[in-house]
Image 1 (cartoon, rainbow over the protein chains, first blue to last red):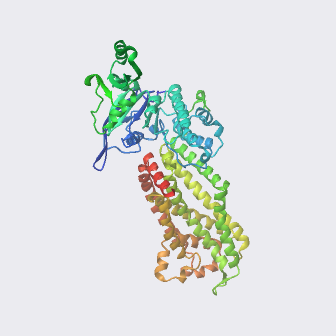
Image 2 (cartoon, chains in turn green, blue):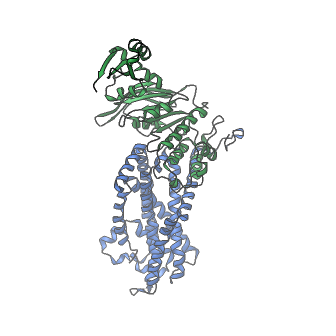
Image 3 (cartoon, rainbow over the protein chains, first blue to last red):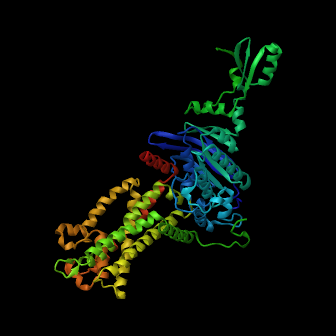
Amino acid sequence: MTTDTGCDDVVLDVEGLRMRYGTTDVLREVTFRARHGEVLALLGPNGAGKTTTIEILEGFRMRSAGRVRVLGTDPARGDEAWRARVGVVLQSWRDHGKWRVRELLAHFGRYYVPYATEAVPRPWGADELLAAVGLSAQAGDKVKTLSGGQRRRLDVAIGLVGRPELLFLDEPTAGLDPRARHEFHDLVHGLAAEHRTTILLTTHDLAEADRLADRIMILSGGRIVADGTAADLARRTAAADEVSWTREGRRFTHTTGESTRFVRELFARHGEAIGDLAVRRASLEDTYLALVREPGNGSGLPTPAAAHGERTTEVAR
Amino acid sequence: MSTLAPARWTRPASPAVTALRAGCGRGAIELRQSFTNGAELVSHLLWPVLMLTALFFLRDTEFGSSGLLLGTLALPSILGMNAAMGMVTMSQVLTAEREDGTLLRAKATPGGMRGYLTGKVISVAGGLIADLAILLVPGMFLIDGLAADDAGSWLTLLWILVLGMVATLPIGAILGSLFPSARSQGLIQLPVIGMISISGVFYPLTALPDWLQIVAQCSPIYWLGLGMRSALLPDAAAQVEIADSWRHLETAAVLGAWAVLGLALAPVVLRRMARRESGSEVAERRERALQRVG
């Protein structure tokens, strides 16, 4: 698959990326790498700079400073051969409304024919691709008659028609209903699993990042404030499980790194007096909220809860 | 694995040739679309039908003491004006498709911009030629006094039309790149209507004050109209024109100058416009457009 990528396994290499509009720094010192076959989610609140980052990587926007290599090439100088190896999933609105689905896909496929190699046959056949994104039944329909979810699948199909080594998805599920979103997640899973496509997607939806990505990078205040698997990120606050219970009509909560041991001791001491026990495990969400609560605070990594000690509070009723 | 059999893989055509071919395919598909959907078919037919109706009632009216019929004079002039309107179509289409993200898709595809522009030239020029035929063919049965029965007339018509399109379509593409939104395209209509009204389409330029004649002679609309009249009218009709002549040399010079200007500037302006396109630009325009509707 990667015979024309060269020996380097690093698909995305970003170092010290800065973007400045006027006097405002939208991105400062964004640094990360992605390896072949990885699915990366760039997660962050609206306005964190996700779209700016992805557009710089797509070669659609000039950066202010920093070193960026996408498939070994500076995207600001990417030529058509480079473009052929990169897939961009755009959010369609009403473009190509009069085209028929299969016709449109076959048309965009034609441009990739000269970039076929023996290892990577290009383009992806229109019928096969329509089946892969679940649009076979709509092949003869006009694009403007598709539902929102179907349209987004067509957007993905167009992004994939050249069998890209790297695929960019900017907020791919924005505006989709829950069912369409679910189907879309399955589609991305399939791509990553079956075709080993490297994928960078942006989202402001934590659950989505958790579901889709091998690795999550949290962008806040123009910096990457956390980078790791969902489990890695959740573990950062692993000591902050929250145990709550009632005893003698009073409600207590306790923050602890070892909730199992704490509960065992709690029962050993009070036995049947304990009621309404609940243990809330620290989640990725806690990490995320802690990180983005103070935008611009680049060093705002959540302190391991062990450091601020265990404490029990009585909750006023 | 796919429709391309990897076992018999051979090096395909060069990227540039492939993009041109894909663009031709694109143009053909868009042309077919514009003649197979109801709304667009109506817009292709409405204007010619209105014009032919007007010409039908003018067909027996004499123009001054020249012995020429008004309808006979007007038909080639209207053809010339319609040919020049390809410029407006090009401009509108380019702005609209920049706004809706068609251009961004082209930009995200290798060779996509080349293919897109090739397709656009084919679909706009093709649509224009079809529209001219829709007007000219019935017009020739309806209107007397045309002199279009020899090869020379058709040859003149052909070179005027081709040169006229080379002169006007790049200018249209430049205008289309400069307008920020489809809505602001409305601004282009006023100067165009102004140019049409002084371009000698509906009455000879010689009837206008001198300074207006000079202004009108800068516009490709006048020369396209004059060229069409020279192709389709008897030579005697040249007496109502400036200098009593069809002025083919001047026609070629002015249209040629527009063509050179357009072809020199269009790549620069188009490239600058394309460079700015990105997903967030399109999203922003979508926001603005939806706000206007809501």
